[in-house]
Amino acid sequence: MRMAVWFLAVIGCSTMLLGCSSESAETTTAALDASNPASTARSEHRQPTREEQLHPKVVVATNQGQFTLQLNAEKAPITVANFLEYVDRGFYNGTIIHQVSAGYVVQGGGYTESLEEKPTGPAIRNEAHNGLSNRRGTIAMARAADLIDSSTSQFFVNLSDNTTLDHKNTEVDGYGYCVFGEVVEGLETVDQIGKSPVEEGKPVNTVRIESVRRLR
Image 1 (cartoon, helix red, strand yellow):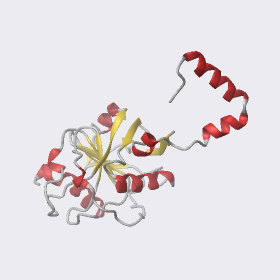
Image 2 (cartoon, helix red, strand yellow):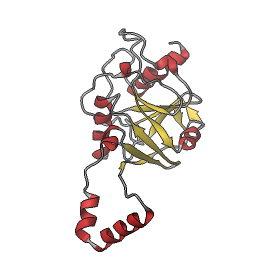
Image 3 (cartoon, helix red, strand yellow):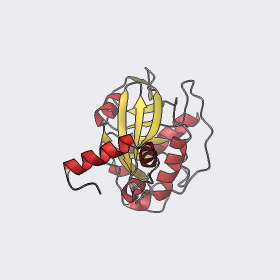
Image 4 (cartoon, rainbow, N blue to C red):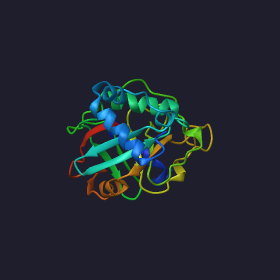
């Protein structure tokens, strides 16, 4: 079954393998903005700062709580761009966490509640060689076990330090899994999901991703 293949790709190695200078200035600015619709509109449509471009934040809301991710486009530009494309078109809304391995990873981003795999865009370049490690709280891309550049939409969050999933060499078994961000708020929610009772790796009680959206 395809779902199992993607999961083994992740867990296989565990089983083997400027702001104003004063408060008054800030208050004045806020008051001006509030009384000026045009100013408010400009604020809402402002261009993101360089920091926001390099490290955008995304909120993942599930039926068991939410958590916030900070992505790293500085280290994983291809992967972050790919992930945000799926986010912006609402691809993840209504998908599920389809695999949980206690103390190891939680994985989602590919299946509906009826376990139908959603059609995705083309696979992307694996950036596992970026120097980021699969440590607790990081988010990484799932891929096929036998193909380095095979990640599309599925991702996993590391529940512990899974350095065995890091890039080691250019061989398929050692290339690793690309880390492209980390959980900066709500890691306890991820931990709780990671304690879900499972049957064949899938949570018995559906963990549904209600929405994934950029935090602006």
